[in-house]
Image 1: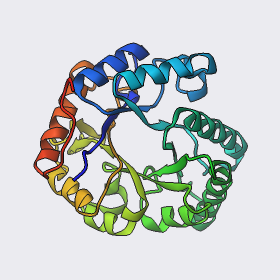
Image 2 (image 1 turned 45 degrees about the vertical axis):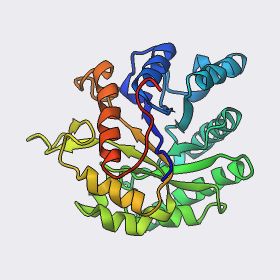
Image 3 (image 1 turned 90 degrees about the vertical axis):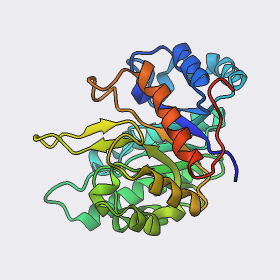
Image 4 (image 1 turned 180 degrees about the vertical axis):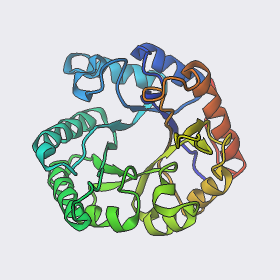
Length: 285
């Protein structure tokens, strides 16, 4: 069985400069980085290490450390027609950047089914936006990955969007946490419906929500999600994409500091994968 690649999202270390992100990734045994901003900047095309004048040196530094870009995360969504033109521009810029960096995909959202609007019409609107973006991606070597997030979690909403795009240009980011919104506890049913579209997986864990209904985040394997079974089902079906640890420190500042959370998460994932007979990189190698 081939080695499983593990990344983490920079969402988890919102105060770190780029060089610290790289050093912790390499020292902890990660294979790659999912780019969701650096410090206060979220727009991918504004990130200093990836500006045209700095890009070649950044990619060379990553290669020296044995690191790759797993995914470029955008804020693109298509549920709001007033934002469609701006979101298309952002998506096209991200596709071009990913192509120049050898990154396989960009993350986008659906994202909402606004109250008072016909859900079928919203899905059609989102599909049209993704289809337009897919025409830009066609031939670039970059795919557009719709995250299972918000109201776009179940197959009845995401599959029509993907089927409207240019074939071979789209896929899914499967966020294991958000599966519950569409499938409850049944991740097997979710995989039965969606596995053929999954290109990238966000891994995180949860405990029961607070009395106010707020999520309680945990590192993979330390909460209630059935990670051994979840990973076993993914691997049994032949999943070969990235597992990317998404620690939402940027949105939830009280979460454990990334200096300890990121190294612990990859240790947990290595242990869980080893239990499935999957080979992985070890820290420092």
